Image (cartoon, rainbow, N blue to C red; front, side, top):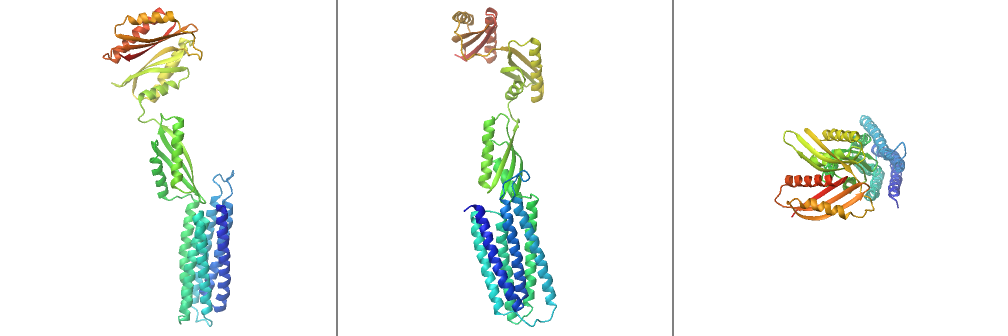
Length: 451
């Protein structure tokens, strides 16, 4: 049986039991002249109206979302509960008014007797039956309609018990006991109905318990990878809870990683909050990101940049930045200069307190999927140039490729491990410069390693 059928079947049974209690109470109440019993019977019939409304709204609430109700129709269920609360409040006011009026009247000729006690006992039994049916349904499914009818059943036990006490007092000689019981019953119903109206009115205005919002905040903050919980928005529609969460993630996180973190946030919320439907939005945050990454990211965003390497910077008296940028080797000097200017602009937008930026432009040559045969003559020439430098302890691989009219040269060299990075960089630059002077259109990359 579906959850919706469990809910509607429980409400149908509750409605039938209420109607049977109404018939018994109204007939015996009129016959025995018991105001408390008649009052409780009116409560029963109007309770049946409320249950009927809840039954209808429970069916409407299961309709799927449409263009006008993107969150579904769960609010119809809340609206039905709100209307039910107002009806009970009206009943309670009637009870109070009628009880006060009867208290001022002379002693009635006909007083309630044992038959009225039997009717009250029957109603109490029917209320306990309703509680058992609704409690069983609530264990299997959730919904404000079931909760409202469950609370009504408890209220009915209280009101019928008060009526029963009033009838017993009349039988003991205190004839006004029946009217006092009806007055107490009216006050009790008024208080409970006001509470019910307030609760559903808050739900209709999308009010959510502060504890639930705090719980979601804590769940999100405790999820690995989340830098900050920016906002949490929650609303209830029937038995469903819709949560929209915005989180901040580290700007260096890949899209795949960001999606994984968002999925974990969604799962953690659903595991802790029943019937929750979660939407997670993520935004990058660049706080505590390394300057190297920020520079690379800013420069890479410029159109025409084919690659970036050798990023360096100093932070004394402002930030001085140097980077090597690859651009199309056929690009004109004027266009390359525009690319360089745009790189500087983007870096200054991303990095604060920049004093100076030096952009070294280099021609970019793509490596084809099919590599041409190596030029051994060029390799020998490159090796001889490298051997001229005693700081180079060992020459490893020397690989050259001729790509159209360009020679791509890759060299692995071992240097004295005691040399500083600056000294190695100077030697490497000299070797690259000498190779480029001897080999026309050469692009040289030297990979230094400690010997």
